[in-house]
Structure formats: structure tokens, C-alpha cells
Image (cartoon, rainbow, N blue to C red):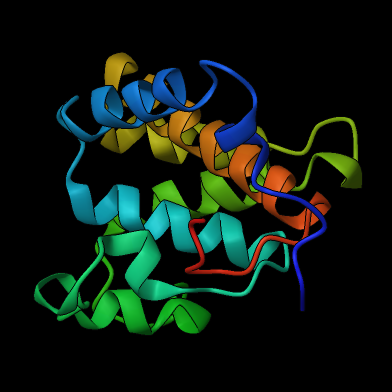
Length: 151
């Protein structure tokens, strides 16, 4: 696959820095980094985006995933290695990323389960993380960006 264009975040003046700043804020907002990484992978799966684990968990061999949860995303509902809080975050990410599938795509049961594990600020972090990953997926799919190619 060849990209249709240079990544828009690189050619629209002053667009990339604020997006990276939001990412930094979310990464330092108190939700475990692994949970944020799991959300990145889950949302990308929902969007049919090829999953490039190194790009979602940091660049370079020193950040290659060592946690089995990052490699078992296809069975997060059943695999006992995921905590109840991680499952709740993943269910929220999956529901919130399926907006075209119905008016009420985040059922109360999904929201309530997430709220059992996360306080309001943490829920805000999860929702913003889900939205940000969906934004990147939309940009990358629309312009056919190649996973791992950041030129």
C-alpha cells in the first residue's frame, strides 16, 4: 500500500504538536500506561486498522511488548490475564468506536462497569484516549498511511 499523501498532521501547520501534547497529558493522567496501550490496540482493531504493536507501544527494541496482554487482544473477553478494570476499559473502547452501528452505541451496562473501576477523571482520560485513537485511525485510513512509516 502506498500513502495517498503525506500525513496531514505533518503538513498542516501547527497541527501535530497539540495532538502530541494531548497524548502526553493522557499518558501522565494516572491511568496505567498498559491500559492506554490496550485501548490503542482495541480501537485500531475495531477500525480495521492493521495493528503495528511497536508503534502503539513505543519505538525501538527496548519498548517491544513484553506483556502478554498486548499480544492477546483477540481474546480479551475470555483471557484471565486481563483484569476486570482492563476489560471494562476495552468494552468502553469497543462500544465508543462503533458509532455507526446505532444511536446508543455505549450501553449503560458498559458505561456502568467502567465507572465501577474508574473515577470521573479517569473515565475522562479513557474517553479522550478512545477519541484520539479514533482520530488517528481516521486520518491514517483515509490517507492510507503505512503503519510504522512516520515520514
